[in-house]
Length: 195
Image (cartoon, rainbow, N blue to C red; front, top):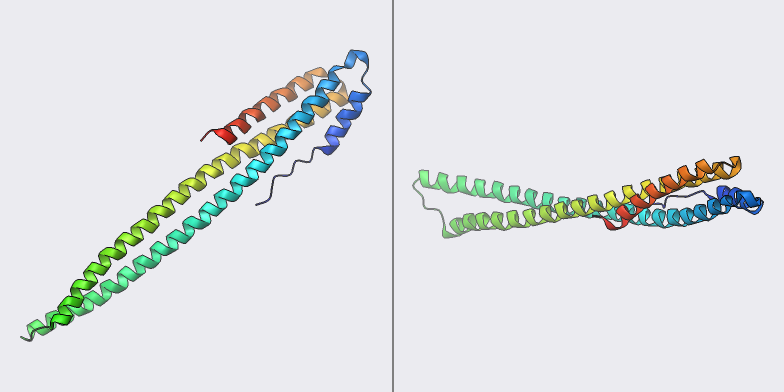
C-alpha cells in the first residue's frame, strides 16, 4: 500500500517568505512558520506509520484468507470421507440383509473413516480459529491506519490554515490552525499507542 502523500512544500515556502518579511509588530508569523514546520514533520511520521498499518492489515487479511481456504479444503476432505463411509456402510448393510458377513477389513475401514473425520474436523477448526485471529489482528491494524490517516488530514488542514494566516496577516487563523494541529496530535497519539 502506498504512503499517504503530504503535499505541503508550497504552503511552507509561502509561510517562510512571509515570516522573513515580517515587521517587528508581526513577529507572530515566525511562530506560524515554526508551528507549520513541526506539524509537517508530524504529518510525515503519521503518514509513514499509517502506510505501515495499512500494509499490515492487508497482510493479515491475506493470511486469514489462506487459512480459510485451508479450512475449506479440510471440510471438503471431511465430506469425501463421509461419502466413502456412507457407501461402505450401505455395502455392509446390504451384505447383512443378504445374510452375508462383511469382511473384517471392511469393518475396520468403516471405523477408520470415522476416526479420519474426527481428525479432519479438528484440523479444519484450527485453521478457522487461526483465520479468525488474523482477521482480528488485521482489524487492529486498520483502526491504527484510520486514526493515523485522520491525523495526517488534520495536519494538512492545520498547515493550510497557517498559510492563510500568514498570507492574510490574521493571527486568529493561526490559532484555528493550532487547534487543528492539536486534534491531529490527539489522533496521532491514539493511532500510535492506543489499542
